[in-house]
Amino acid sequence: MKNAPIQPTYESAPDKRDYTPGTLPKRIDTVISSVLAALLESKELTGMESVFKQSTTRLGAAVHYLEHHYGWHIERRDMAVGTADGRIPYITAYWLKQAKITQAFENGARKWIESVNVARAERRKKSGECKAKAQKINAARQRNQDPRQSNLWG
Image 1 (cartoon, one colour):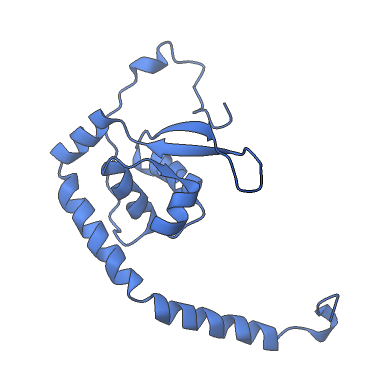
Image 2 (tube, rainbow, N blue to C red):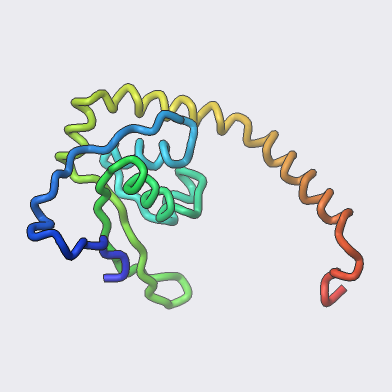
């Protein structure tokens, strides 16, 4: 399996680990919080879905951060998918076990999820401003480009 969780060799019973839910991030308007909120709502996430729903191409990095910095144990599996151009690539799907979700809700996750959804909606309202600012930054970079480092074809 390509993305199998690393098993410490000193554990005698890795299937008997303590899978208590991790902590909730304090910053609620981040991709990390958005990913965790979706997982806590029993959603199974893949990289392509996260591009459109969480606005990130780095779902694996968010999952890694949630596991190593917040203590969440996120399940995963590789699966084959067919593409329009005739290839069969493998993607990874991520989810939380229902027992962990139940524990998190007992610890007040519902209120946190709602605050994350509100914060992310507020942030999305600023997307037009951010796109315009990014365009200005890119235009300024073009003006400041060294003429000796121009495009090979033009």
